[in-house]
Image (cartoon, rainbow, N blue to C red; front, side, top):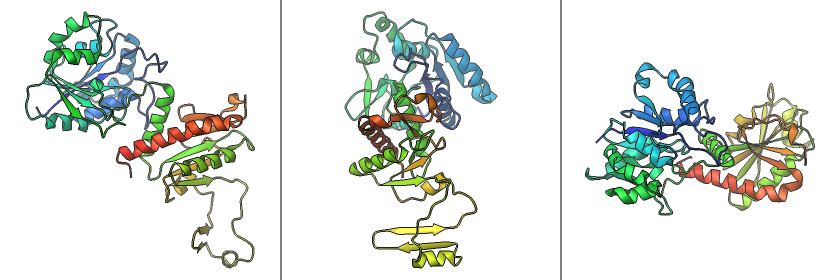
Length: 374
């Protein structure tokens, strides 16, 4: 069994998110559903079944805005499947997809697990040296089975109607009932198995994904007006992040010009004599001063800093992920894109907001490390 089909679970009520997860924007112009779909197509799976529950509007949106953009060869691999049983959650979706699936086995990928990778399914499959199984289920570091990221054989569909007719229609109960379930250790893949259930979790997941592509991860601190408190927030974050073991760089824009050297120093005299770049290296500090034709790009500067994370302080809209600083009761003046903004900090609530920001940034940095980021 060297080929798999893929079932993408894209339905569900999304009550905790407050809106359909599948169509939420991801990065690089993708949505969560197109992100999952592209993974399956790039892995050259046998076929892809997109389970949409009973949501006709979602199915139409996926068809017109995603599937219709595929090549003809890609379209032939993709089908949309509606639930054949009502209100039975992921188990009902799994049953409906397996009942029509032509492949010998299917990897299941929940659309709200954006870091899940197809390579993991193939690794788990290859670890099983026999074919006498109904499902292969990863187990997280906490010892919890993760059936929303399992591999299933279609023939178990015949066993599921009796379970769906009962009082417990959970996937965990189904696994206990069908038997021949093999557990595989996935304790090193906590990020991949992470569900994005709440909107704030989704925004920070996007922050992690955006920083995966950077040499040095960053976060922006912005405000619509001067004297709002950006520098206060930045210095507080620097202090608190240093305390938890992260080295931090800061890049700041200044439209009015600045002077970093002292009049009469050797480097100042050399600079005034016409040197394009001067640098001085001391036992504990290094400084470089250079002439530029225009203001340097803040992002480019950040990517050459020898630190764990960089904070960009700017009055512009910044680079995602963004923390926006505001005065109390002035949230109507926000300038950052809501999709890029991971937090709003009211300067009067700094003691309340900063610990949560530090926790979220730590979690993002751990996620980058766990994803073999370097």
